Image (spheres, rainbow over the protein chains, first blue to last red):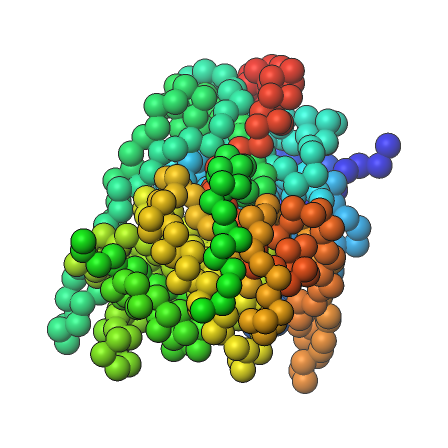
Length: 260
Length: 260
């Protein structure tokens, strides 16, 4: 059987510890090519570059870590990789390992999830991997091992077209891991504000600050993490609110159509 | 009764024809404050600025067009506007009028939709307005009129928490408008590729090019536009794929948890 091909991307840049740990683990089961942003791209959401062209330069860090650094976003990297840079369509896209969890509302801001979403958009099974630690010294080995196991499972089973798995790993030693939970996107949210500061010439500027308010739904991704479990959430980008779609049939919205 | 307050944003920048048409229409039913990006931000998706602080400068173009230009993304603008710049919480967020439709897959890349999504995230009813024309000379009057009508309807009825309306208006004269349809996000997609060019010093660069492949589901947003109807799609950001969530119960995913 042909060895599978995995495209690895992320949002922290091709040069981050997380992507290195991911590649070194996945290459035990597949050929791995990195196509990732040249620079840090956190919280870019699903941005793509449409006004300017993209550039990509080959990267090589030892024989087993090769690919391209793309001067663009995570979604750009996956789009350019799949359509142009790779010699064949990958069997799987894996994004990560992100420094910091991507659960609940954070999913919509996440560049890590965005790279996986772009894989799903292109009809390729995809996985986003995040570790619930912002420390650059965080131990990625547990997350990297689980990435390989879930990748093997997805290579075997496939995923429905347009669906990705969003995996979040708690920051605990391997012996403290309490298992794996299939979860739903939680409803935790940021109680956001901005801290206003004044620059030396007297103009205001604003730093985003926020308190994370945790969902307590037992099915929520965040709750699994709090129980020291790895959270695996199937996500898609079908955004229609079907309930409101039904309710709006009674709005008699046609009456709004007469101009002026 | 207190006059409602509408926060208007967009992704084309505070200085675009679309936002001007929108403000001039909405101010007939509400107080309107603009909080929009200082510069063009197309296809930024739901990016937010987390690594650097934001700046905002007051704008005024005549007595009726006031607000702030934010050096950030559409989502930044709405977040900063609601939490910090505005004196009170707005009753409605309206984003647009975008030059170019935001239907089907385009929704996930759209800065226009992102501004409205951020309103929904903050618990405020929100509407994204797009006109299916990229021409800077496009006639915005029909879309601006409809924006006022749907805004009045939403101010009256409210929307479920976390839901927004994504409105797309066909580029036809008022007398050709065939009505209004409540629709679902379509499954049209981009058959994407990149055109490779070579710069004067011999390095490749890549331009995104794509052919749009239309969904033909009668409920799809794109199909309404093709029938010269205004499309109104209720969207949310609950991204869990419930079908796969159920199916994954049989994956016996717990077996993946033993480290190494």
